[in-house]
Length: 284
Image 1 (cartoon, rainbow, N blue to C red):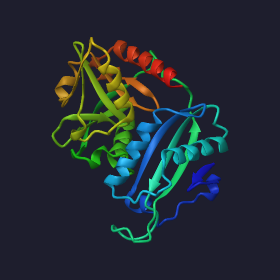
Image 2: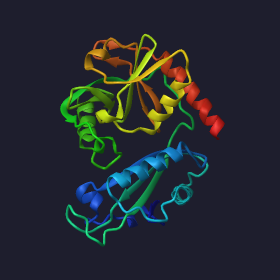
Image 3: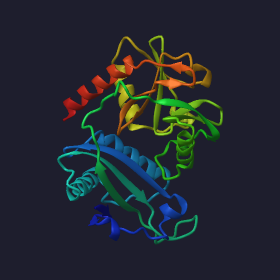
Image 4: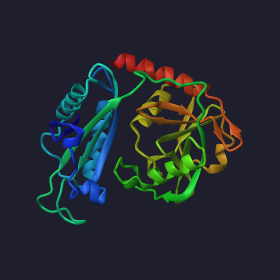
């Protein structure tokens, strides 16, 4: 069951209009959420990122798009899918409806739809036996700038990069910007650890303004034993690092195990997962 503008519909009844601007032009934004027993992880951060992104795309935000309204619609969707008392992955999609060419027509109005599916783990874990083998994806590059950091439906690089990873027996790829700096993974932000120092690319380089990235930076800021820097990461730094890890809201922290001939440990990533789960327990 899916939620179309507040109405719960079956998948077969929720056919997308071919004139939908999200379909025709990628004129849409989305948020991927992790929800456990009706508790939306980091909902305030997701909500304000969505509102800021809608403003950047010059969408007319409906008056009823309050944090409370959208939360109630998410919970309604979970209940319709028997996931209100379970662990779930939720996607909320916002588009500008139908009408116009590149220029939206005056009649185009913001629509939303929400889908939900089961998710295995209520809290974040790291599987010590799981591999995450990565390499650089160099066929296409991301242009630094505000639009590159949006959670928009324009994700061609992530799509074809994922196909490239599968064709080359990789678990993920690292994306470069046009300055040839490493900015993120295909499905999350990137952190690098070397000699007790942590680096992650700054937002102005084109990486996603990740909600989990924000949580990790807040946790690291409280650790007096760690130096944190938002700075460019060169491809040459990857093989010198002690640890690399990828972050996103659904999986939490994914340690990179191998990059080319380099193998990494995940000790620091595991300690971060423990702190992250402790923070969530306090928020519950």
